[in-house]
Image 1 (cartoon, helix red, strand yellow):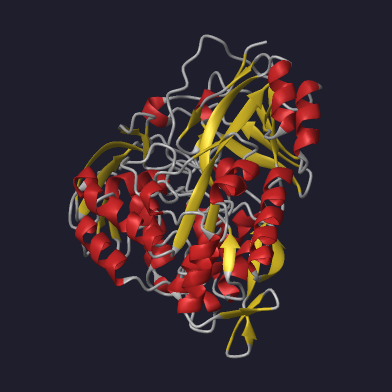
Image 2: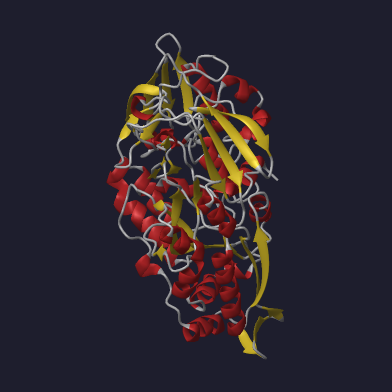
Length: 521
């Protein structure tokens, strides 16, 4: 299968484009200790060029910079670039002259331009194309003035904000991209020094780092950072209580005992209850009536409550939950109500008949393949069991297929599924477009083979307006996806990241802010 589809599928179920958010990280306390962060699974691939999995995105933030960054209130601040200006068709950046790779090589404007052009070249099948890099982007550079210019053939409303999402790699990495699978080669505040697959990943601080968000430096950051693979949430909780982990996300019943023990936490909001539908002609879910019926047969509120352990929230946007640029509710009014009787009527209207407790049409039993996040924790697994039970009681045969970070891309791009419980997490509304329009897998990111003309019309209108001026159209476009049951988002997880006493950090729109890490004890 194509590399783009395989890697970008990591944005589905596990991923988020997460690079250029962050604050200046000011604090009166500092330290030269080690901070250990628990992660729920091995990232499998560390490359920011080919993996968009949530774990890889989290770890990449510590080793790679972006041209510019966004603050928690949505303001653009400096990064590798110290000055910038933009319009819907172009963006110009003046880079700092002191930004260096780990080997001491200066990161030049031409090096950054080369990365943009590499991603924009279709032959490289980059998963970042259409997400962090707008289609048709052409980058030019002038190293004498250290200036980079990005130009797009069509208006791109979030062109500047998109620059916050591209992790910049060094020239040596771009020359040999596969080296990034198990190593780091960027300009960020940390570099990887040890990778023990399935166990831990150790990073050391770069003392010369002074080009962080808003000019932040690494002086007060911990000397070492360890990402420890701990798949079981109860074990993560025990290690937090035993001070063998300093930071980790823990949900469910273990959250209660950590709170009772006095551990403080910060909350990240992400899509968690989300269905994708395969609309390719050979699938039963190609019929919108069947998609609607299968969805209405479920008690989505109950499923969401079980999946999040009662600690979730109702989505208002598709895929963009933390600090959305457009905040109007595109979802709530468009979710099918739980109504098995209406669902049955919809199936009968589509030519299905029920006999012996099963739905059939043209001699074919109504059966679906359901991939789901197999490593997400006991609450989600219970929710999957509940969904299967509700579908079976309605007369649908369900074949479950658990996924991991390493198998998600292969399964989704193969097309061998019908409804997939694999949420997408993104940071800008235009990043949804390749998932619900354009080429299907394995050549593109439209894994469900969605063809929604009204969605395409609305995003076309939105793309013609700069930044937030198109919010009404972006909202209507997302609403159209939910109305037609091209996607169904029904629960956001409010994930707590706990910290042991003496460890502080903050959460922004992309997860843990690297520049906020402090050891105060």
